[in-house]
Image (cartoon, rainbow, N blue to C red; front, side):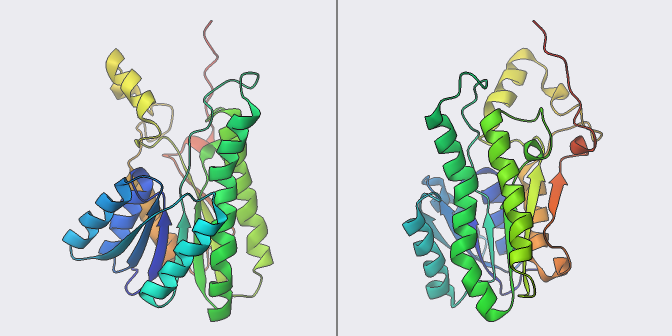
Length: 259
């Protein structure tokens, strides 16, 4: 599905980014794995041990110079770039509206929204010049409707969806596609506190029960969607925000807070 494609994946040190990197490599891609954590090296070791091709880069996706560098590394190491998955993100301040600080907002937006913008900005000229390329961004069901995340997190992901939709039209006629994935509840390091609390209470079987699939998702299920959107099989999908959430966003059920 991705044979010969040269792809950058951010947030590749764990969770969705790691799963996507492993899948992309297994589908034949050469992968530049980017993360701020050292886990990115473990991802690359796993890929190379399985016979795939990947390089690790430790970088902050909200640092413009670092983004310029890892895009350049892809073109230098692999001779070009065919796709980028701007996936790196943080969970936000984890506070109520009145508790959030400006610093909380700045950090959340820096990684989740500006980081996506920078990944697009510094890869898109390569895509436009060659007349093809695929950009995928991780948004969230929290960016579609309320009650799936905090205010800063939800706003940051709504911003990603808007960036994708607006950019699709700014790339009119270029042959470059851009889409967002909106994960539902996925078991990752970011959601670990939710899963830990449920397991402590003995209620793990209830996690994700409010969606029609009646379960939570795995990082590989998002990774499969990302690899599809990065591939030529998705050649007519553009400017779309794709929920991968077990059906949650069909309704976004709401449970009245208990006092």
